[in-house]
Amino acid sequence: MTFPITEAAFLLLLQALPPAAYDHEPKRYTLVRVPFGDMETVCKFPYPELRLIGCTDGPLLHVFIRDDVHGLEFEGVLRHEWAHLNGWSHD
Image (tube, rainbow, N blue to C red; front, side, top):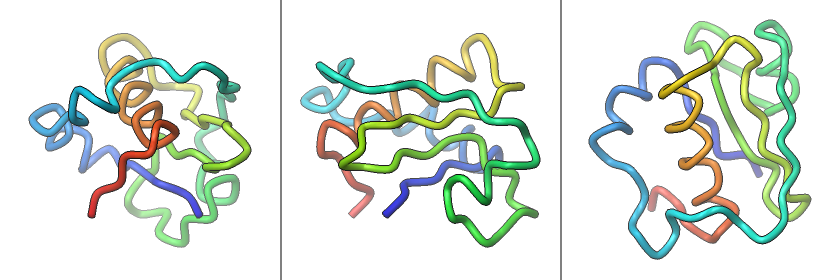
């Protein structure tokens, strides 16, 4: 299962960062930077028009973030994906 985030959703996520209990760096994870054209395949996300920028693979503890994402956008996506590794979901 992946937890994707798209560019369109990112602005909304700035207003809805994860709860404090999940908003911290996990003890273990691997960050993988992925080329723009490969995100949908890596994250198993079938909607390329939504321009995916990040996801996790859950139990394997990988965070995938598009390689053209930098600065505050990168930090926000990373925090979002860390929270998923820490057990947060959108439910």
